[in-house]
Image (tube, rainbow, N blue to C red; front, side, top):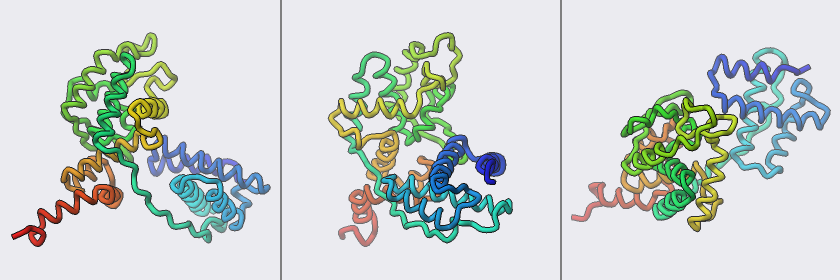
Length: 302
């Protein structure tokens, strides 16, 4: 009955809402997970009742998924059923009556400045070109606040002429400026000198800044995360505290600790809503308290 509904939904998201490839992949995985659960009940998306969907949502929480993943899967099912209802394939929305649990926003993990320095040093200490490449990638994320997907998708042309900043296409296809400090630019120069050794055989025209001999032709986010874990262990830092996104958190937090304006940090991170950026004010609260105490007229000592 409901065969083809998911495919039609993903086609709509791509055509009408210009959803990115990663977004479509996530929707597909989320809906496949829900479909598998319903199949175990002898149901599909067309025959599922509100009780079935409620059971699936409850099972997500019992499964031990992170709150963010569980919330995303619930949202995917809800959005899918809104589409189904709009197409009149069903006359009801079985996901509507199920109230989503309130999801608190966790504070981001943050590395200290000393830990970032140790991580970069450990990355650079790895053998030969691999160390130069890893140190360059860490420097770029920490200097510019890039997302891992943005970092691995950087074209060679973007940095071939030693620019002072990058033009990065982020979520929703929006462009933003990402600055490069002197240390990051030096790391890029060092990497470009050894990059040829990492080119796939017979692919001298490879367009990516970080090429790979893998199927994608460029280093994958997963492989970078693995290398980062190894560098963290070498630096004496618990790998569980380190990830590409944690480096982005460190970029934002250390800027705020240095007195940067929240709106500037919002622009640098590419956040559409400043509420997303405000989470960093919690981890930089000591510095912000000091700024208010010393800069506000009523906080100054006479």
